[in-house]
Image (cartoon, rainbow, N blue to C red):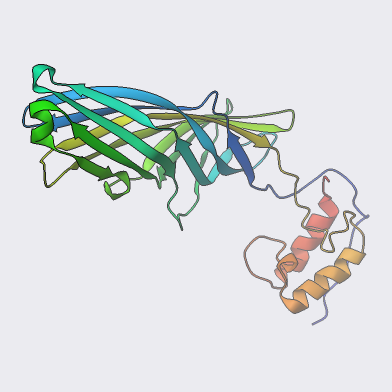
Amino acid sequence: MKLPFCIGAAAMFAGAAVAQPTVLGVDPVQSSIDLTITLDTALGSRTDSDSSTITGQMTIELDSYTAPTTMTLIDYNFVAGPLAFTFDYGFLGTINATADNLSLGMPAGSVPVTGPVDGSGMFMLDNVPNQTTGIVNVSGTGVVGSAVGNSTTDLSTVPQDPIQIIGMVAVNAGTVTVTIDVPLAGTNTDPDTGVTVTFSGTATVVASGPVPPPVCLADTNHDGVLTPADFTSWIAAFNSGASECDQNGDGSCDPTDFTAWIANFNAGCSG
């Protein structure tokens, strides 16, 4: 196949480039989990709350790192420290509960979720896959302790629906900062003791990371400069089916990518 060759002036200008994902680290000073647990037993219900710092990271992609209009959440994994709860039944005794190895994250194989970003930086992501994991251990003293016994709840076995995440994204001086609130909710009944554990709360996360460098699609030989040599490199990519061939982002390598390469070349790239 003979492809027409028509390239404008060699481009070294700021212009079209491809947005890339960036990994944001969670700031434990500004990030925390606040969890409330209610125990329903034959002797009544009691509620207690505790909080802990959060660590972890999230991977996002903005359609533009100067004026974003959409944000894609690719992955996240938030880890919280241990939580402890005490349920006082007075002279009937006390029930103690601990929550260890708590984490929130996207289940393996989840599809990234994209949502709009408004002019103020507020975004909304619907139907975000979420998996809460951790172990809640319950033990007691006195009459209530004997009635309840010891139980363990694996939070990963609790049915969990997709969640909605609303937050803010800001880009300043080469740093991307995302602030979100992740709702927490679930319930589980121990079949042996009949104790129902209901948990609810919020994980507030503030994460930041670098603005990623743009990828210059037309620079097919990756030398950092747009020259006619990139045309030769694109031809080689076309003939071999290499990823550099796909210039229009449709996931395939065909003659329409040549037209796209010409457009990308003439638009130039920031670098």
